[in-house]
Each structure stands twice: as structure tokens, then as C-alpha cells.
Length: 251
Ligand SMILES: [Zn+2]
Image (cartoon, rainbow, N blue to C red):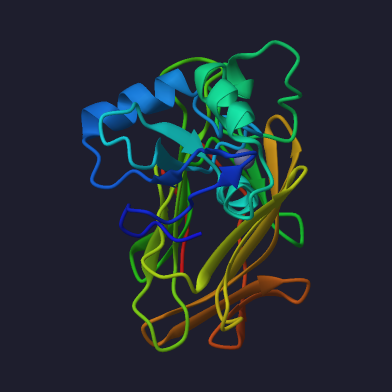
């Protein structure tokens, strides 16, 4: 699902009724804040905190709400009854008791999770684990509301493309549909269809995110993190364990 212009896409005919859902653009900062709060900080259907701002299409004045790319795709295929979407919009799963929050990126109090790298390096209380050429790739900050979603941003660059801020403050907003986001349980995957840009991690416990693979192209620098360790332009580099640093490692 692309964070493109709103409009008539995403119209879902169901049982004779229509529940059009479209990306809400343009959307003011005040309305983003309101939509986040109303949605419980997460996709109204599954609770995923990486989500887009949506609106019942054709209803310019209707309040915006959050849907993750996976749920947007299911809705676009007509897989969710219009009545269900309307009910979820009014009573989002993230504000319902009984939602299993363990796979989801919610904070424990005001902590940000430890980031663990392949090979075992651990970054604790580190808001920006990695920068490449002074560009922060992955960053986290706690939500002002204890127990609220972790605020995550992600920059990745694919070959022959400028690096793109594909997640901004937990909003999925890539500039092109070449980017893909998928969550399966506690495993998250952000990828570019060229295969040259990827972040895959598992939210193993409430206070730990384990990076499984990360790669991207940033100008003349190619970063690859995986089972072979961390490679910068094919040269091995060491990711250190750090505690309470603004930036974990400059590469
Ligand atoms: Zn969802």
C-alpha cells in the first residue's frame, strides 16, 4: 500500500454497501495527533503501531484513523465487511481490553527497547542505534504516554535511489510502491522490491528488539547486517554494545 494521494482507491463493495477507505492526505499535524489518540496509537484492526492515516473515502470531513499496510491490503481486496471496518474505526482494537500487546511495539512505561544485533551487541536506552554518513537510519523514542506506542522512524536507501524516510514517527509513508511493509506476529519486515534495502527484526520481549537483517545503499556506502556480521562496503565493522547514548554507532 502506498501513501499516495487520497481519492477513490480502496473502495470496498460488500453486501451491497460501500466502505471506501483511502489514505488521508493532506492531513494536518493536529488531525494526526487526534487520529493517533482516537485509534489507540495503532492500526484499528490489528493493533500494529506502524500504520497510515486513513479516512472513509468520499467523506472528506470524516475523522482520520490508523490502518497498517497489511490491513489496508486486506480491506482493498474486499476481505473485511464494511460494517466491521466502521465498528473498528469507532472501537479500535488497541483501546479494547484483551488485545495481546506482546508482539506489538508498545512501550513498557516510558522505556525504549534494547536493540540487539546479530553477533550479540546490545544497545540499551539508545535512541538512534545506527547512523551512516551522519544520517540516522533507525530511531526510537518513547511516547509521552506511558504504555503508548514506541515512536519509530526508519530511513532506508535502495540502489539507484535517494534514501527515503519510509517510516516517520511510526507513520508508514514511502514515496513509492516499491517499498513493502509486513508484520507476522512479532516479526517486522520493511523491504524494497529491488532486494537492496531491508530491515527485518523481531520484537522478542517487551523491552527487546532483535535485528535479524538490515541492508541499504546510502550514497557510496553499502551497509549489510546479517549472519555474516556487519559489513560496510564489504568490509567487516564492529557494532559495539552501548548504554544510554543518543547514537549507538556512527558508520
Ligand atoms: Zn493492521
